[in-house]
Image (cartoon, rainbow, N blue to C red; front, side):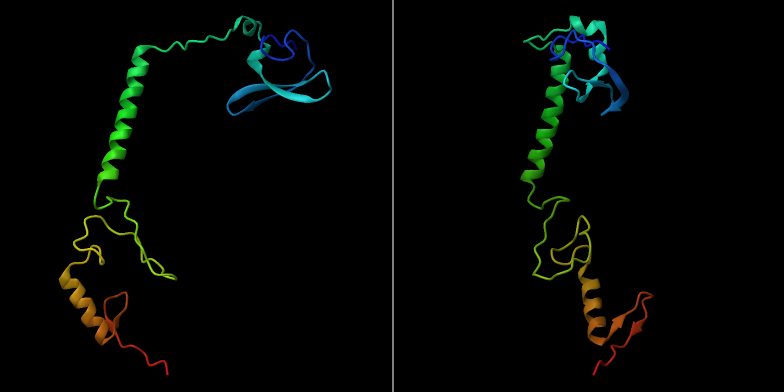
Length: 149
């Protein structure tokens, strides 16, 4: 198999083909190099057309592609600026807890007061009263605290 790509160190040489594979979505060939080691090279480097490929210093991008890229970057930057300027943290609130604290779960959006997210004052009072009298099981019925003496 001949390597045609002019920027490859073995351009113009014929090397034995060992195998074919696909690596990162690109068809590659495994060849035996002149020093006896095996190497993957992109299969397109073995096509005669690869000999005519050249490097160009100025990139050739259509103006419309650059304008599309500008709009995408502007949208991302605007989104980042809005999130950074948000006083409430949006959906990215970082809670600080004492050591050995196990979080109860995610904080729901639009909580009425900080500290007990998503629970109104009536529910807090009811929960406090129930806690003083005993606890509730999952079905909502009240259970007495057991004496652990």
